[in-house]
Image (cartoon, rainbow, N blue to C red; front, side, top):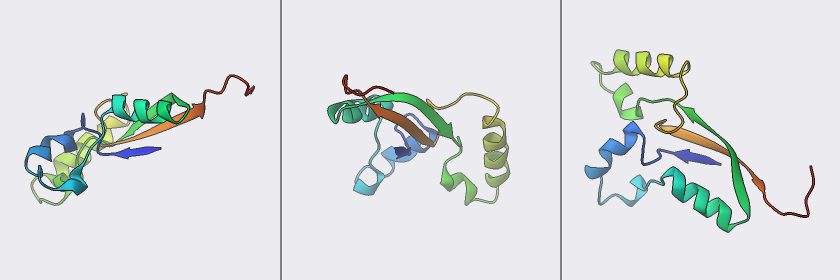
Length: 98
């Protein structure tokens, strides 16, 4: 499952500016885990992709900085603050055996 723009990401800093925009809705990692658990899944891994929000690539002055930040981010674990988080989950049915 993908969470594009988790509330803990740098993208989340812009949420105050977009408070009335419902398309800017975000989910925190805890909420994603709760939703998956409510449907019988448990998270087994979480991976983060990118730190710089898409808007930082639009401005000429911030584009080089955004590229540098994202290039460095591949070398450090950053799923908690990544702009996009991908979750790997499995059903926690006790009768299912791997």
